[in-house]
Each structure stands twice: as structure tokens, then as C-alpha cells.
Length: 463
Image (tube, rainbow, N blue to C red; front, side, top):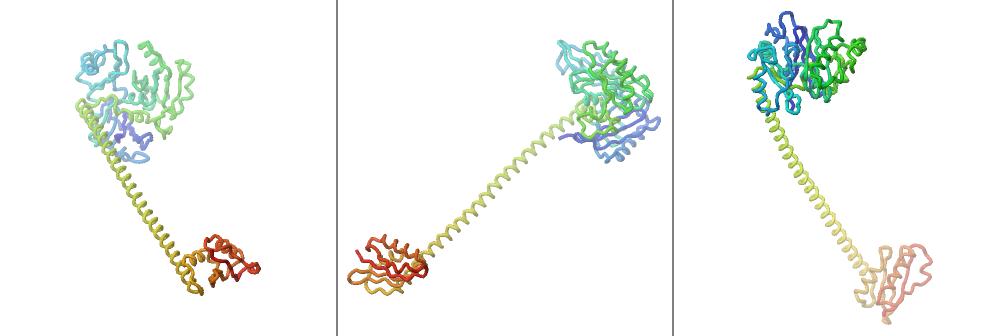
């Protein structure tokens, strides 16, 4: 379950808020900071700054920001970054090794800064480590302002960490030139989503000398780290930079691209006006990145993050169990429902079968009664075996009406009646010829002269 937070960046002059859900920007807000509120990165007037955060959250567009959790960034120029190499050792010992020599690589005393580190590469016998440090007075003032604004900082980091994650996905070095800040240019060199170098320089609103600053930074990095060259320079800033693109290319001789929204592939609905929030967009990926929060707060946040992940796992497990239970209920419910339907269908089949048998029995009774009625209606002058009578009557279908069955003393048999059609009479005659107690049936030719309602008298002898 992803944590629901917004991002915040600030400088001496401008503060920006951004809320992203998934890959879509939900809200943005920015404002100029009144003079004297922030001085060289330190927030001097904490109440005014915190009130400004609260106001911006409520005025964010297209909808206000209601979340309290925040990933916040210190001004890039106030964060000291240094890449060093240390002998290979277990990760558990890296912190002690860096603490031991940190004052030799940063321009502050250890007790004056919060610092953090990250392994960003390896060599045969060395670890390449990025060290980030910021003065405590700047971090503490920022942290206090966030808390006063009823915000809960998940991470306090720096913009270049987010930019690296946002734009440097390949294993080739890329220089990201960020012109989103007022009168300030930030150049970040990164690869594989990790910062390797960062610098900030003043620049006027006309970007005079932009190509010179980029060229100096690239040349400095190439001389400092001879083992790898910068593959591309990506510049983000106002859309009017295209007129100086060729000048930069001729000065630096590198693959230059003026960045636009198409370069930020992980955000779907980014518009050109959101480019000024590019630092915020990168911070959306920085939950697991370098944090410069106060040490105690950082440890608490780390433990809380672990607990959050554990609770998320538990929640997922509970949801999984609920899903299994619902699936079990659904399956058994379906089995019960199907069984109920089958029982109903079986009962219906039984009813149909019973009804069918009942109809068959009723038809047999009706036929039997019909036989009795017919026999009663026929004058029998001599005794005749009852089986003979039944067989004679079974030979006649519903289209034959028998009127008389007569057997004489000389065993001559006469059968009189009416056939519905001539063809019915012929069928009746053929059926009688199949009986084994009488000889061949004699049918007068005159009986076949009529087509319908044929009166007949058949004659034969008993065997």
C-alpha cells in the first residue's frame, strides 16, 4: 500500500507544493516567500513560513491538498554533496568509516551538520559512496516549520536526489540542468537514478553565460573523474531556451537536448507549465532515498517505515485471507446454488416422468375402457375366446369402428364395421392377416369402391 503524501520544495524566494497519485499530478501550488522569511536557506520567521504552507495546501489546484505526510527538499545550494571511495568493507561498518573521516571531506564540523550516505557504485577493491550533508540550523528550522504547519515529514532530502531518480534511468552519465529556480542554475550529474555530482550557481533572468556555466561544470567533472564521460546534457527551464541551444552545443560539443514533458516518462498528465515543479516531481520517488532529517527523527521515521511496510504486508495478508474466504464462500455458495437448481430440475424431471407415466396409464385405461365399450356394443352370437376379441380389436386403430364380430358353427367368421378411409381398411385387413388363429381375410372388392366412410364386411375362417 503506497503512502499518501505531497512534496514540498523551497528557496529563499519561492515555495512549491505538488501532490501526485500513481502517475498523475493531482495538485500544484506555488507562492513567493516574503522578504526576510528565509535567509540563505535557514527559515528565520518560522510562523510565517508555516502559515504559508497551510495556505498553499488549501489553495492548491485543481484540488486542495489534504495530506499531512510530506517529502520535503532543502535548497539544493545548501546541501553539500561529495563522492568518495573507501576500501571494501561490510555495509554495517561503512557508517563508522565515514564518520571517522567526514570532517576531511566537508567544509563543516561534524557536530554542525546532519549527514547521510549511499553506496552508488563499486570498484575492484573500493566502494563508491555519495555523502550528503547540511547544516543543522537550516534543517532544524525547516523541520520546525513543517511540524508547526501540522505536516509530518517522511523524508527531508534535496532536489538533485529526486531529479536523478526522475531522469537518469540508464547506466550512462547524464547532466541535468535545472533552471526552474529563480536566478539560480542547478546542474546534477547522475546515472542509474543516483546523484554523482551537483552544483548550484547564480544566473540572471536572461540566462546570460548559461553555456559557459554548463561548459565549466562539465569540464570540471571530466577532469575530476577521468574514468567516465558525460553522454548527454538535458536542460529544463522556460520554453524560450531553444534560441540558445546551438550556442550551447558549439560551446560544449555535447549531445544537448532542451527538456520537455516528454522526457518525464513516469508522469502521464504532465503539462509544460508543470516543468517549474520538476524538483517536486522527482521527490515523489524519494521515499527510500537519502534523508537529512534530524538524526532522532530519521531513526524514528526509519522504524516507522519498517512498521508501515510490515503493517502493509499484514494488511495485504488480511486482504488475501478475506479474498480466500470470500472465494470459498462464493464457490460453496455456487455449489449449493447449482445443487439446488439440480434438485429442482431433478424434481421437475420426476414430475414430468410421473406425469408421463400417468398419462400413459390413463391412455391405457381409456383404451381398455374403449375395448370394453366396443365389445359390449358388438352382438356376439357365438362364444369366442376373449384373447381372439382383444387381438382383433388391437388390430383396429382409431380410424376403424367395429360393429359386429360373428362366428358361425362352421367356424366362419364375419367382421363388420366402418373405416374412415379405404387405406385404413386395407391396413386393418393386413393386421388381421397377421393373426395366427384365423385364415386369410376375404375383403370384397366392392368395399374398396368408396374413398371415405367405407362400410365393410370381412370374412374368414378359424384355423
